[in-house]
Length: 495
Image (cartoon, rainbow, N blue to C red; front, side, top):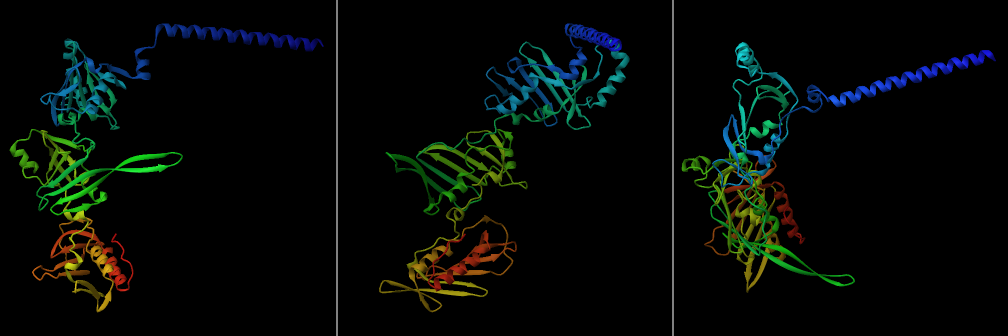
């Protein structure tokens, strides 16, 4: 019993000693923390945790920003209600690009300081060699990028950008005789030329209107194409518990020159899809001279499109021909800017009458025909149209066929939808030939040939001229339709 009591006492003493030690250590740690808090973190500690804040200038405190880079030297001027590009004060600017640039100067932060150049004249004389070595090491002796910010109180801040760091994600910056390492995001903004800070928006979104007229011209087209658009309001009734009248709108498209024909909405999109909310990939020039207009290919425009809304002038765009990279130079009326735009976004650039009508051939009335011959390497169909006492009869290969089926066939197989324009020349024999003869003996026959290109498509040749290609499947679809009519079966649309 005495032994157990001794063990218990010793244990209690050890616990008390350990508890006292813990309180002592905790108190010392708390005192040290409070002391650190009162003294504050050192500048180097802040630098490691938060980076080095070099500049903090708001846009309202900036008077001018001058940028010098390998492609340009220009100044952005704060007019109070926004920045403009000096020399182009009347032109709208790209708020996105200007805001992105100005945002850097509101909180320009470096990762760390790399070197310091002395401000003392005596020390400069002693370390001039070292200073030049430092500048050379970071690409700051002959820098490509210089930025000068003048604030509203007259203070100047100069930034010089040197080489990329080895990781290619950071750059060296000279500011106030110190070299810093920082993220290269700033480089994207200061690499732009003056035109990049101008607004690259060309056309607005499609406005509301009742009628519109679109005229396509230019050297790419043999004659102007006029497309008239009319907005039609439709009224429909929905009957649930109560009858509700719903109004909706649809657009009707009519080509009025060089021929008159109703155009489907899908076909009209070849014109309208690349017309509205159009922006430039770049701005190449402002107020070009006559010589520059020739160099840009805009003195004699390749493609021109003009739009009027409800009888009032809308806008006109004119372009050069596409270059080797499939870009065009473009100008808008009442604008001094020359834009660079990807031709792939201008659906109307080369569109022709045949593409809008979805056919290279304008069909005649069936009563005007005397014969339609369709031949391939293995098949031949000779449709003969005769008139007797005002009635029309049609035969194929000597067999009388249904006149209405023939009329549908003629309208269908001659309306071959071209897929795209081509400058290629046929080098193979025709896979299929259609010859249309007319009752008017003074009217020449029309010959339509489908000639393989060798790449899964066919040239569409009419009377020896080839400007378009189409799917090679057209050959089989036309022959199948001819066979269907001969057997009294329905005609299928070409697709």
